[in-house]
Image (cartoon, rainbow, N blue to C red; front, side, top):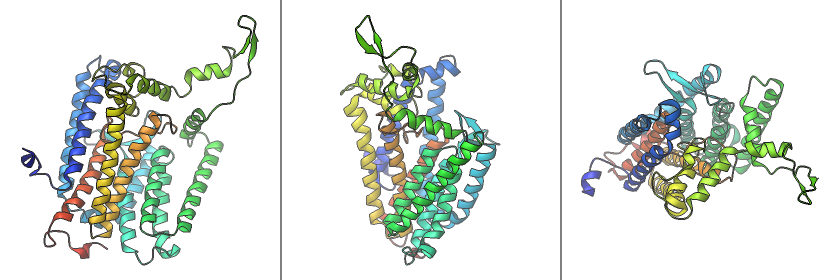
Length: 413
């Protein structure tokens, strides 16, 4: 039975199994968590959202299958053109994009009337471009002018275009690109110069936002998320004659703020606490009734509430860690530098995004809005995750092919 299932699936079998487990978890968690969404938009029809998510998931796996059969040498050839087309798309999104949930991150495809985040495309394209340049400039990568500048320009341009609407994605993408450069042998001093340029660009954007609030409205969101995450100063207390102690007045700014500050994370912490160590069972979570976005941003907390900290929490974390180790193994076995850098970059970004989502749920970092890859209910972002995994599986597949059937070494640096 096992051989029949995998006779059509090439590449790393463990990655296929992990992806299937994520898909199963996604269906169970999303269907259990969408009741409030269904009541708000579909008069309580949860089946509508289940079918919609199921379609995106099945089509995503179809895309993954096609990508794992498509030689990734085409990505090598097209990455130089795609990087500039992606920059144009990001600029169009920034100027004319659709505003959803306070962020202008989407553009709509006219024919099929489907919106997608251009930053999802930019993640794959930029990593492919960086992998190409690093593989070609192996002898010059320690030279700032010839080895670093050709990469630094596109990295900063793409991240700068993503930053106004999606700070967390721009940050994760920058960290991933710098990690690739470090692995490829770029000097620490040169990486620090890129970091300094990124910080300078960020400070400039903050200055522009302060002078022209309407230009970069998302900056206020960044500030409020960071401020709600940081510890607050203790408000002034007054003497209460009834209790004989100093208390915080109910009308104090701190009390009003406590009712609203970081509501999403506070509800996630309650859900995790109710989950306990062991599973409560599917459909028994109650946080879907009050926690914002239990099917996307906070799905990790909702899964823990229904499946416990051991199975739901540590289980999911271990799957992502195993996925990263499998990708590292694939990258170490390939003879082509481009293939190794591409697999490493796509895998690192995917797992880093997952860790960011989990860290938000347990209040380790401020709210980022990053979905849990292959688990959160999503639209085209799910497709782009499947594209990334499909590319990694294709690299794994070609590692196993004999030299006569694999891509020519002349096609890659």
